[in-house]
Length: 590
Image 1: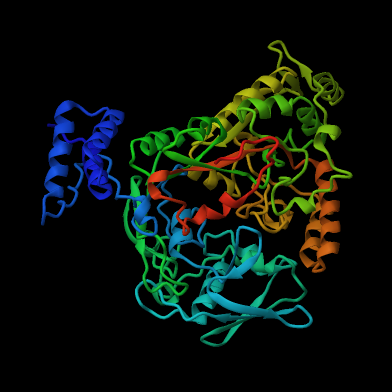
Image 2: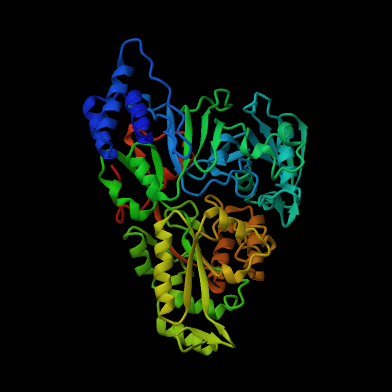
């Protein structure tokens, strides 16, 4: 019989979970296995159950075949076993977490930061056991845990300094430089001993600890002699200090991790993780329902199928910052504020939101989700995008008419020989974003603007973001989350300050002096109440300058198979499960 990876997967699953004959037959039916294949599974499971017998190890798949996933724990084994997950953002094949394009599962599982945040927005220890500021707020001292790299080498303060120096090195392909700067100038660092790191800055800097929570520490002893850190073999064989260590990387197919027993914060719950690279969430859902993976991210349009399925837990969260229509401000047409205003008036955000989120999204009229940790920075008294830019196609047409953009023979507006035609990009993996493109194409087409949707692999789009020579005509607008401050701190220097144009993360080339000033002020205002006032001013400035148009806050989620017996506590995205959302709008998952 021809090799079928589903047979191997079911044999392994049934053996580890001790399925009875009825369960095996039900699972085989769901997989669509032939009668000979079912017989093979039953025979293999009988052999495995024989006294004194040990199940045979899985066979290596034939060339081009999808590997059978490692077994997941049963309810009784919820603190152990291998957890299989999907990754729909593509295989970047970069395991160095300080480099642009680094794989996020590698970063989350293999590496540690000095500090990190819990699900409630509190900063907590990671590699730093404790820390303190000087009285003037200019010196920050970290006291480090005794930890080990996965190869057994002791972790020391020298590794922290080496990481910072590599980020500062202009030859390093990284976007983390702004995390180590205050007022555009680099902070300084030193290590008086192996367990202490001292950082000094020229002025108090409120989000600095958050910035450090984004920087994974890399090993000096493995990279200090590298001729080029961007291409070093380490990038595909990473070694960290995190709870799981790298085992194997099969490009574009899977990456495997196993528990690191010497992890300095205690034994991890799971025995390991396997992340399978899948082309989109549809492929992931098929694998989840075949029992090949145990958990996956699910966009809104896919969530209804799991709401009442007893085999799965649907764990919802409201994304903390809106999905936006982001404008490329280097584009010769879109740099005109009037054009951006006309586009804003042409979009029926409520209809868009209800359609693409299946009625589950929250209309976004401010910068941050009302349910998230950044809600206090929303200026509700003065900022409401739906009131400032109400849906009014006739007003949108008038604005464009007044600006000299008149309909041509084909209905598309033109001026001085230019057609008002824009590319609208997004990244693959989510039908939601593709649906956004189609609806926006229709709405903007109604006022004479041609939209050309393009869906790119995330890695391809990411390369364009950080390319200073990227052509703005080929990337006029995007549907995505830009700009957002990465969860816990409102600082948007990285994505909105003009000093951080590509190769930095302000890849939409926005520039406004008042916005720059307020971003700088927000970074140096330490008093919490005063800082809120600064960001309310920034909220108003963004409303008037339209770097991007907030559309909606999506209700995203993870689906977890009940085979796990619970939520794996060392899952990197566990923090999202604790996000609340309005009970009056969304049904709570029981």
